[in-house]
Length: 160
Image 1 (spheres, rainbow, N blue to C red):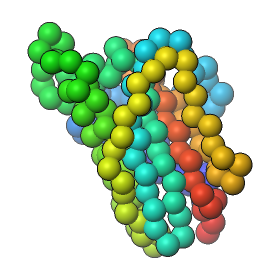
Image 2 (image 1 turned 60 degrees about the horizontal axis):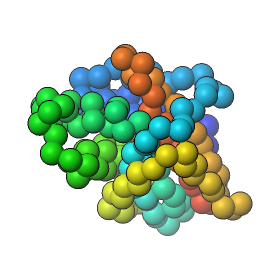
Image 3 (image 1 turned 45 degrees about the vertical axis):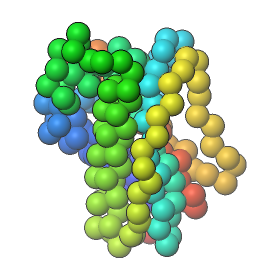
């Protein structure tokens, strides 16, 4: 099921970006370099149910987060009024992606509920999983060459 989780996350991300942002985003090959060192914005949403719990992080450069905000809200860059609007947009994107994942899990008989989105901003940060957690990492590239990284931490590992 962990391999299936990658497929579910990939389809959720591409569907949300296509539907909500009218943006084509493609998964990068496994092992693709993850950009770091510049300001990033990360949105996270947790999920929990009888047989599974975890958290999904979506993170990208602050520049790409502003573009996402513009597309989501139908604004020009100069109309964005500070980091709060960007934080809200990235949190909502994380919520929509994890909502799609939740729907796919429920279709497989794995019921769960979601947490409220949270945001982290920083430079040179990494997400580390505790030893009992399975970590899945997918990198995506937008049509204008911006990277989006999605990390899913799941405990216990999903099984068929």
